[in-house]
Image 1 (cartoon, rainbow over the protein chains, first blue to last red):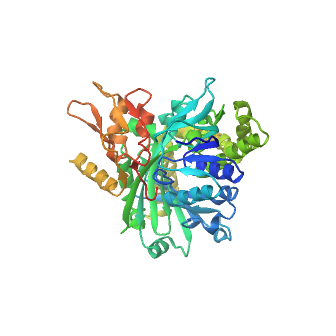
Image 2: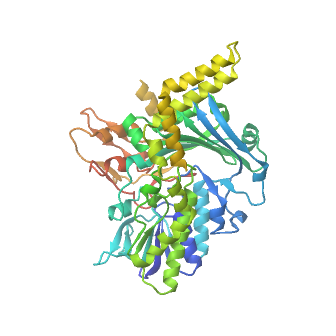
Image 3: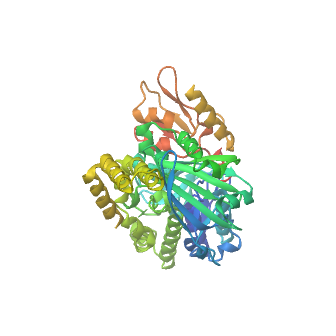
Length: 435
Length: 99
């Protein structure tokens, strides 16, 4: 089928794969990119917020033609119980800048654009092609791939595994373990369409301004989880995700949680009258620093979600994906330019460069966070949200109860729910995991 | 009653999506079993497309037509060997319009 040998084969046309393919092709490498979807993006799901800095590193003038929805001027962080939300909102006109910092995007459209850029840079992009296995030589080095198309193997000096969170090829080839249920979240999402002006009125936006809401609380029914609402130009992405291990233990259904979130009195008016046009599900890596697998070997590197590079605390994933794709590509180009073979020893450069970047530095900072939030998660996702909500209501409601009694009641509620020792212990553990 | 209502809701959701089904080539298979493990049983609730259902004999069956290829069942049940999971052939399966 394909006779020529490539400098590099990239598996997958998501954020990390597109970043890698674009970077290598624009540096003159002969790149083949394989994507199993009908078009790049047709298998990809994200909230989605895209961070400009990391894309600027790859395509500085992306704002000229990338399909962007809204630039964010407001972020709302909510703690919810069944009838209320307590929130911190940050809105700033400073975010209305010439080169905004964060945008909402729609992945199917964005990925098509990103892939076109890789093609224009010289990469060969082949869609509707599922890679079925990695080809290895007698010494175990990865030397190419087999696909479900007619014809034999396709060969390359190096294979970039940008295959996404579940990582079928790499795990099956024994390059890394299959992710564990306690280190991945399952998120479901719906696309709610509304006229542009209705979205702008409901969120107090003008032009391309956007607002996002992220919420923890009883909506995740005691599981470690997060709800989100992102404004696009003419639609709202609304979803919720929880750890797979929690879902399995609780036997909960994600669509039931999603419907409950949609019917929450704080959310319902925001999406009223919308037409739902898609329902999607996706896994998110949540294991953090300790879940990062071996990132390179003889003839291969792994990038993006497949490498579990996701910052759950800050809800950053696609920026880590595109940065890891770019850095892997730059490492490969460096090895290639000094005529070095794509050995494990030489490709260690990728990890060395990644370790120096924000990607690994951020994940290392929060290395203890997953263990904290994922153990006894009901404390952080149900007990405290309820207590916070009661405390807020107690503070706001004026009913003739003397203030001193109200304060005592709030304090007593916290102690009753978690005990004095529990409160101190939670605070200390949180502080240490955050530091 | 509750189950029926939930089921119709998921189907309504999936009805919005675009799929290209590969007839006769399901990309996920459940291996024959007497009694499902806790994880396999959980999939009858956890699968976001409700592809897994319990039959009259208490065994778990799959109809992957509405599958969104999230991989949750692979994470929960591939290691134990209870299911076989492959990607659909190129171009087949779910085709997200927005993603």
